[in-house]
Length: 408
Image (cartoon, rainbow, N blue to C red; front, side, top):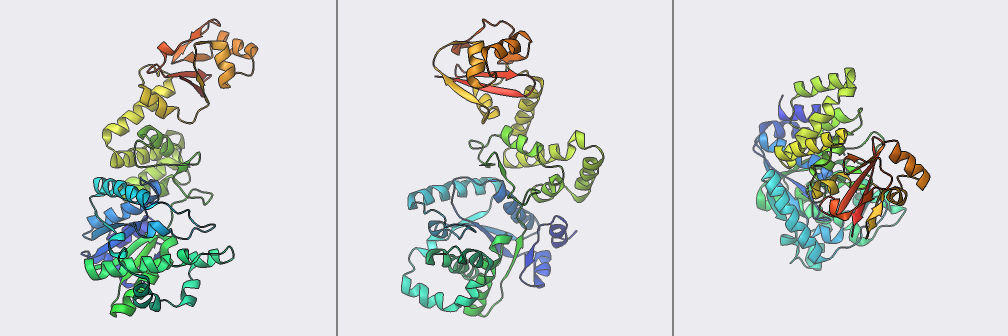
């Protein structure tokens, strides 16, 4: 397949600025950019799906530029329901530095910062050189603005569209950049940039958007228990990432394979068939986890995540390190304890049993494991010296209920 046809098959094209986009993409040799604002110090899975499309285009002979918005990040794009909180210049710079390194390490793209060409522009020049090219009625008709009109939108947020259009124009003039790629929520900003280039230079630029990656209920893909799945392993461990993907919705996992991996059409279709006929094997989910973790981290990280998962499944957790324990059991019920304590008291305090009587039944019935070892003695004492790293004791009640005691 040509690159355009492949992107269509993968479901990665939502809007195109003109019919010429197909030919431009198939011919190769074009410089394009994709942007993100430094609202955090790590990329997450939502970014990953967008940046992978840039790698696909790079492999097809195009030249990608990643714009990290040090300027636009200082004002924030309009959210559908509220204004973004302002972040400090120091935090924006820190986030920019982190994102630049992460993107270069992962993808090898050229990274630019729109603060470099925005910082010296004064207000009068902004209005004369850019503001006069934007009709207010045109701006009000953009979806991102229309969604905020009933709630109210500040002039700062309203100006975001002009700033992003300025970026496209600057890259067009200084980097020979002829196309912008973004998520579908950026369509209005892309077309604003195309219009600015046409009005100021009389030349044509292009753009296309990709659908946002979502769950079956329409919510954004990439969060679990309210927390984003980060590409920084210090924020989201390979094990946590593995669990996220292995537990993906059956009805969406093929879409995720198309969006997030470089597996071929034939490989994905084979996994799709297995997902229908042998869903209990979770072959598609395993392939998704392996491909993403190996790309983001490396094969060793994937193997470690797989090993930890197998240990947990079997209950044999004795060889886990403290760091692995903290990663595995992040989010399970936990308490802090300063002193050694008897097992019945610990079970009640951590919420594994509702009373000493019930705790006793669990212990004598053989359904309680401490750090992977079955305990049937109701007088057993949980000690800090026996904890993982002398910091964490893992309690398992039954097959799937885990709890953690953090020793002070």
